[in-house]
Image 1: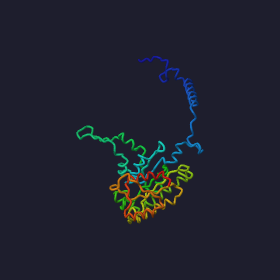
Image 2: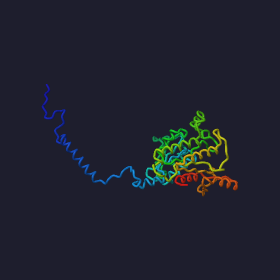
Image 3: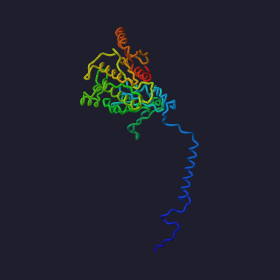
Image 4: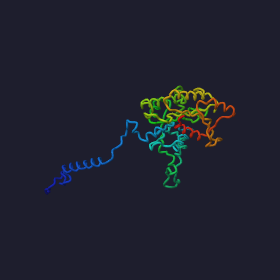
Length: 343
């Protein structure tokens, strides 16, 4: 026979503890709220996050109006676009700590050129021998890579011939650099790079558009729409940098050749003409000479002239009997300088 001795505290009830009394808990919570209110009242007033008055704008906002805080580079996996991305990441003066660069690519899995040029492959790799128990390959970033600013770079896939995709991507940036092209020299990129995605696009819908023409229009229309929604400019105020930079071909730098979509130089001219249709957008067209990385050294003085002097440059070439050439690294530097160049 089992006997149970009585207990002062039933098993289902907690022991009598003054700190567990609900009235004591309420008093403690009330005291803590009063202390928090006193501590908050002793703090300096918090500055407003947004200000309707232009006179109360901070120095950082005025500085960002002189320089873009977010740059989108289209065609960043190309031979020039990858160097432009590298140059901006390493030498562009960052206006704010949140400065970022977006690399627009057609297929991020095939961004080998961009990965190499920006230095994403410069880390230290180790792999154990076959007979070792530690045979896993490891890749580590080194201190030398800190100056590459890779943490400010992000990749985004975009179809330039899709107005919706372009609009969504452009909506979050201040400046767009257009290095994209359908051609690698005189060959279509879908053939020269063996890109199955580009081949499929060309075979499925050959009349969908041209990157040199419709792609440019899609970007400019997206920028114009964003400016209209912001009240005239991308930031709601006057900006002193170029919101769109187009990389084109200089007069007489290469011979004309016929493509399935039209003559190449005429396509470039048509793309430049589209830029003129959007006078509300601060823009620059950078006409490059023929790229030559083998016989043209890096760091040479660049001959720069305004857009209106095309005839003068063409006559100069005819008199000298040679074409203008430029190293791609110098070309990338010229594109970077065009961002904040007013004329």
